[in-house]
Amino acid sequence: MNPDTAGLRRARIGVFGCFATSGFVMGAWAAALPSVDARLGLGEARLGTVLLLIQVVGLGTMFIAGRIADKITTRRLLRWIGPFTQLALVAPAIAPTYETLLAGAVVYGLGVSFVEVGTNAHSVELEHYYGRPIISSFHGFWSLGGAAAGALTSFGLTMGLGSEAMLVTAGIASAAAFAGFARPLLPPPSEATGGASGRAGRIGAGLLAAMFALGAAGTLIESGASDWANLHAARVLDADAALAPLSYTVFGCVMTVLRLAGDPIRARLGPGPTMFWAGAAATAGYALVLASGAVGGLPLAWAGWILAGCGIAIIVPVLFSAIGEAGGSPSQIAVMSMSGGAGLLLGPAAIGYLAEGTNLTIGLMVPAALSVFTLAAGPITMRRVLRRPDRGAPHEPVAAAASRDGV
Image 1: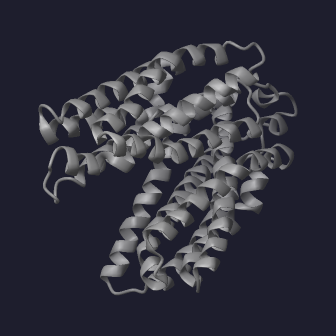
Image 2 (image 1 turned 45 degrees about the horizontal axis):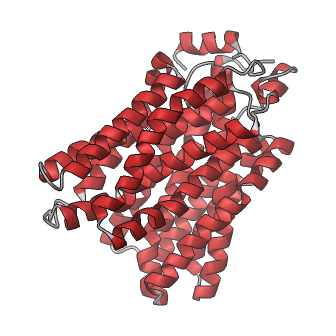
């Protein structure tokens, strides 16, 4: 039977918590690297190898995680495996050598894979219960979790706390928190209703490839800001050392706010128009950033990053939601998660090597061009994916009750 509104509310809080906890763990891993480098004397190359290994292992095992979720459901995947993956945060705290840190990176990469696939797929299932967009805000909580990890790490170090003790404590606390948040998660709609759901449909390989390309493009567009916004301010615009880091700050803040507020926008516009306006905002934003080197300087660049953040914030949530509405399975949602990993792997190389051979302004034309691609291809792909006749209809009684009660 369908869950009542109280069950929906508890499940939604649980998914918020799972996203925030996994974001916190990822942020804590990143924040721990300077102290790990100082303790083990790693250097840039070996640190880069650790980060690359996490991405490669995560990307290489996401489809396996999706297939497992197909068999045991996303709820069981998150309940059984999720808490243990959070304990991987202990690895950088206790690793005595570079080799053991690499082993910890492998374990953490597996954890990222299973948790990312599980949380994204379960958010799609929960949206099916609601019958209205709710996915974007989950991604906003992931960003908040990462920001909280960085802030707490900085505060702890300022207070003289040891980084190893903080990481061990954070890993244990995160595992316990994740276990608690996973308890109220719901079974798939097909199990709850005893019949077919949107999960029963399958998306053709061609459309799935198009969705993959859009997901990789969206992540690479985002990496253009996260990896290069501050360097663009410093190197191209000659910004003061105190002002240059604010370029990514303004981008990150507006992107988080838009993800938290993006669901009503998507509900009002629909997936196709939302992708159009998201691509348009990202395109206009990058155009301002590219122009800022010739005119306008840092204020124009900040305006560009704000516009780009407004567009980038909702591209990936729209794609996940569309796969769910079209009846995609967890393994197909895993393919979308893989697209994000592919974008993260390709982004630094695509922009960095081009910038090395020319300049950073030319390098940033890569995400600018992909913004145009999203603007053009996004609405068309949404129309083709969502006009499939086999997609499931939302559970109207639950969706209506949830909307009426403000769940």
